Length: 286
Image (cartoon, rainbow, N blue to C red; front, side, top):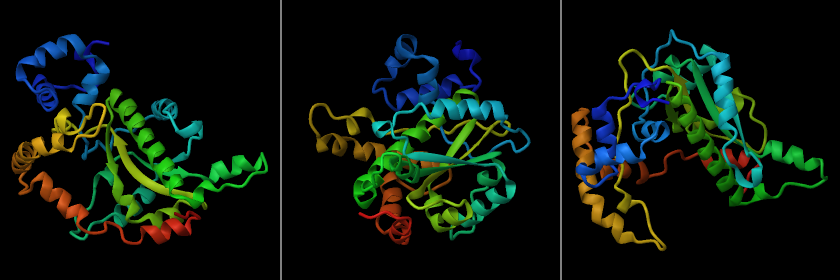
């Protein structure tokens, strides 16, 4: 596959920016591109969420089935495939999700309405329980925290698998964690049985004309990767510089914010207070 003929057009400037966020020396950008770059890593290095879709351009059933088939080849714990995915195409159902996820500001996520497809990724131990009945055994893992860890990890892997597959075909995606805010409504409206739980949503479609992904720089490798043992100092050494990088980026987007302020805004209080009771109501314990 020729990089220049990729279904997603990526400018050299965008690629340089993405590479510079993980490569310490700008002088190595061309060398790394030449030696290491392939279509998959180019796509991953330059990906960004798409929040404006071409509502007039549908995703064909053939393409969707192809992407979903590729997605489910992702690894899962003991091959158990502790997940299900609901494909939402009905505009009325998408409108409900849009309304349910409306923040207090009243500025909703319009891409939920625009995108031809909205996926709901579900942690699913209901089908595991059904499968176990063949062996006349009862499920017990759902009485522990382990079920939540298994299910959310499996869903997370699945989300990334679909993202890579979809974007390789020129589609845009954006994940929506706010469906957990309305998990009770999602459970009711989409008939989720006991021992299932909606983990995350995703809007999928072709980007609107002229819309390109906004690549957000990540922490350098030294702030994330640890060799042989955990080293907290690595993160401490890069935090100030990364915080300043993100502050400047937000400023360019018209937002007065830093990375540490963003984290403080989210994690200094419970995000969705009712989740524990709703989770227990679905037949889980921990």
